[in-house]
Length: 324
Ligand SMILES: Nc1ncnc2c1ncn2[C@@H]1O[C@H](COP(=O)(O)OP(=O)(O)OP(=O)(O)O)[C@@H](O)[C@H]1O
Ligand SMILES: [Mg+2]
Image 1: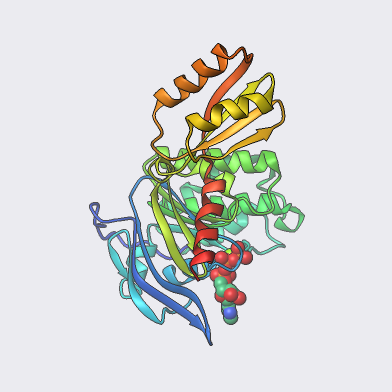
Image 2: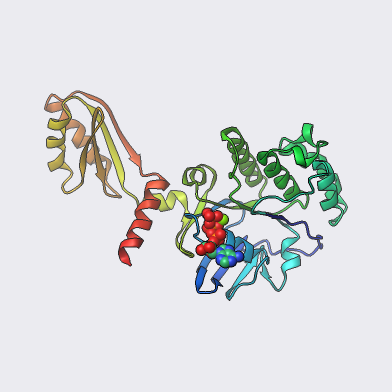
């Protein structure tokens, strides 16, 4: 990974523009098209997840955005500045961690940040202490990086991003290598950056993490964005699983099937589960409840569950597979 700390010019950024805007972006490696016509619009002030399986082209997109490698086609802008044309101006207010953080191992965490800050505006040096505290490294800041765990290096990478007081953070797989407590801390940090009005774009193949951390998401498969938008909106079009914990599951299933038409009703431990299409009204659930009670079935729990992003993601990608 590279940690970027280019000098900060004082140019005004276009506050109305998208944090990240990408049109028709293509990046090929020989015959392999890693990024295939990506269209992306990331609103400001949100946590945005770039979500996809291994090899989907997440890291490559971020490298192209940051000017670490050139695109074969397409246009991009960061914070309203077209890149690569105005790369320096754009990156002045961008903090990025792509791949694994690389630091001078024989220096301490604080010394590494001091080196990075020296190439920035003067205020960057004043941000070193607060940044180290913010990422929870305050007490280890004067230890050599050689003795840091992977999670601590990841935190130091985030501290390095904060030196430039970034409006946009681009984080490639920020949860990688972190234990559950570290992941939880990273999530809290990301949410606190968003609370401060910053935009965070993170890539991940951890669907659950994206769902817990991000407001909006783009789902990428084989270099192409196949869906994007606010998570709540994307899930609104997904099916609802109605879990029914009850006595006599076999008989209950026979009673529920005619009510739900063609919807699947499965036997599950301690009851049944009906997969209802998107937009199913609450009246249908009330009707199921009424019929089961009238027929003498004991109901212990009746719970409609919105499909998780994970099941939706699998649904979308498998449908994509079928289409080919
Ligand atoms: N420098 C490179 N040279 C050749 N091919 C590359 C290079 N970098 C990436 N690729 C190829 O581009 C495709 C996308 O890779 P990329 O690393 O962007 O995926 P990713 O979504 O970040 O995957 P992961 O979840 O494993 O990090 C893969 O097929 C990969 O082999
Ligand atoms: Mg990657």
